[in-house]
Picture (cartoon, rainbow, N blue to C red):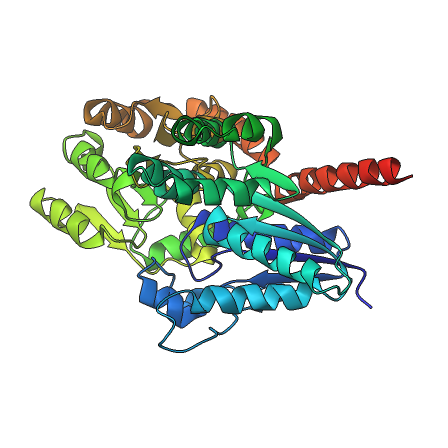
Length: 430
């Protein structure tokens, strides 16, 4: 019989999201630590397509390592259930997994709806009287707060905010992807406390632990230069001949600022601008780029797979993520800049918004969000002014900083939390 299982509930591939990659990394780290079974529970692809989420091309998704089982439970119910059918299917499958007595660590990435599903499944599983041996860990990201709790509080709908915070705190371990995210949660909880007279802020402040996103650092290290050159040539690009943006195309990523800054820069005469990604702002950004009159000097790529991503990062003259906070989204860590720093090469240009400073430390070129003039200056500095020696030193320092986010270390810290809590419970029981 399986002795130790990890279940991760997440929006997994093909969703373009750092946490879909994090789920894969945590799953592989668990296998490396001797877990007997690892399952990723996520949503049917058809449902992801219907939701309008930015998705990778289906034929570009890398296979999961042997030993990782990906489940996409079908919905339960028919048209008479207007919503919730998919959540019911997911929760029901979790109940089945939680009632076989196997020692299980259930990790949910995003509170809504994944932690909701896990919390409900644990409650139901224990109510069945069947053997249950489950420890839960819930990882919160900024959009859990900006998209749910703060919206609910702003509308005076405190019940929805209370539901999500109570669900979060019902987990055995409450995690946040950065110190910024933890502070954001506590501040939002204080708003709810003010409206309801509750005590969420204190409880969140006492219980939330930091667990940075887990990155497969090995995938970005020691890339074969011949392969990088081959892939760049296939795109009509030359090493250090382009400025790169690679992330989701949405308002909060600041791609509009990047296009404007590049159009007025000295660097545009040396490098082209490559914008790689998909998202709801794609059409608007293409129109904005066309309006600059720069033609093919601004190129869009919407079919970059995970294998090509690292080579594009390694070969660029600089990587830019001029993220800026919006009501819908705040960058709560910055996985892509860390991946870029691991590949070496040109510097990372980004902002001091959200959790990005925790991701890049002192190893990036930082400007204020929305400051197009400052962004233009940093682009010119990175592309035109840095000497080869300065670029090399900055790249080495950046890589050293980024290595701390390796998936083995991140999962190890989660496991340490779980083991310490288990030991404490055993001591109290004894």
